[in-house]
Length: 299
Image: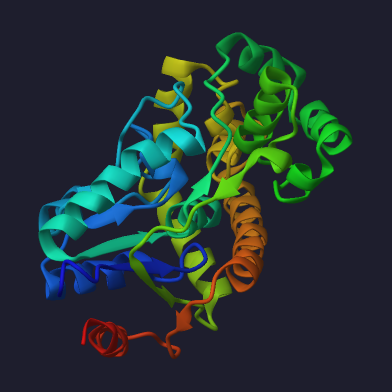
């Protein structure tokens, strides 16, 4: 691959669509590390609930941008870009090609389109106040103050809601008015996964997460960081907390987690359809199909 004509390959798709297995195969074929673009896998100790690549998978292929911070040290989009862009640049300088994978649409869009979010540093005291208010109050606050931003953030997404309010209160300007974009100079190949049996895959993976110790992992995190930690309100962890508190049975927790995951996957599909233009692989997706696409862009 010519370093003067660099290519960034992005493997995207909704949760449980098979990205991890395929990106490992692609990475081995191209002898490349995987650059993580999953927003929850950025945090230490959140392994089971985020389906983070296992120790064996990480030994098989080098992964970047995993375990960047403790869960109580939230990473803003701008901070993520400050970590990710140099990582991509290093790969492009050395090889002329970089490989990204993940389902966090906004993070992917920020990297591939050069989105420049507002330069507002974290406001710990404000975040504590917003956490105390609760998401049921914070999201309606955002809807009233910055409806464009609120429309892009799911009502249950406390992390992004707090960030949007943080930007608004710290700068006096809505986040939706501040974001600009400067497209990077490298080429982008987006490869998409969208299996027809996604509902079944989500159910199977949800059951596996609980078998792998999601409740135990949630107990460890809550004992260390407290049950009010915003990341413990996200899919899977929120239900596991209710199991620990005795408010849900394991069976009900699996059912609700699977339902929330399906709803999230639907939003992901909508985002990828509206915000990206991937080459969708045939169903079921194969390494051969992916490599054919990649080789066409490497010529």
